[in-house]
Length: 320
Image 1 (cartoon, rainbow, N blue to C red):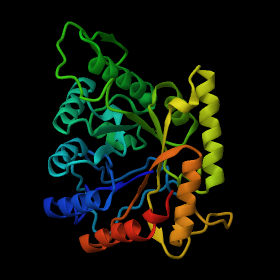
Image 2 (cartoon, rainbow, N blue to C red):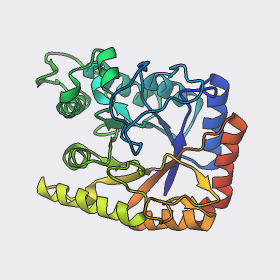
Image 3 (cartoon, one colour):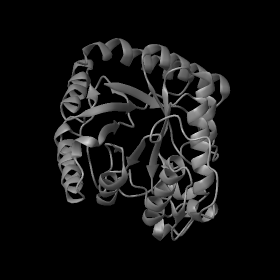
Image 4 (cartoon, one colour):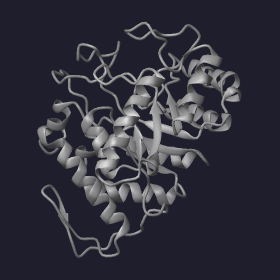
């Protein structure tokens, strides 16, 4: 099993010193995935439905001032200050950026990191940010995401890339260097909804859901297993072997100690004692999951590092 965590790109720890401390200590502890969320600008008012709260509202954190380090730039920085860990967007909102430039940035980072880049991809949820960054229409974000990913793959793999879609087109260009990873950096599709599962089945190298979506909860092993059954069904519909799709799980929480309860009163997956959490990880492994990510960030860098160290000392040895 491969473990990872999110690197701060917002808040007081989103500074060079704390980022280096967290990333390098994590790598030394045996974590091999460094994840970065995506925002370019942050609207001052948001009416869009937030997928990860029960009522759909988004609440600004205390003292929030809209600060976010751009994730692709931060990925390049992390590649320079680490040696082995793979670095992924968790997840990049695909329609926000021009596809040719994005493909070149990812290819460049893959070369400079010696093949350590993973592109976590999502269609996005915040219409206000789509408008602010002049992205294609929010209502067309699913089609845009599929098309841009197809364009990435063409640019990364074809000697003479040619593409004509509804949102981008190119021909008669050199696109080099190609990524180190063959045929390209892995595409992890984020999301728990039906469209996200279908996108994974069609074009994803891995499924990368979050466990706490109230509309599509994956907060117990049984619920994740049911979601996996849906992915298998969608894969078979498009003639794809489900075993060819890698599986990841993004737990946006770190809860070693008192277990969290789901709405039905069950223990939430990956919360509770060290043995509880290790048992869940082993159960996910039995279902084919090979990557699990957590949120270890605390109020200050010492707390963040302490959370990572506790996981490494108390839980990792119990995982098969």
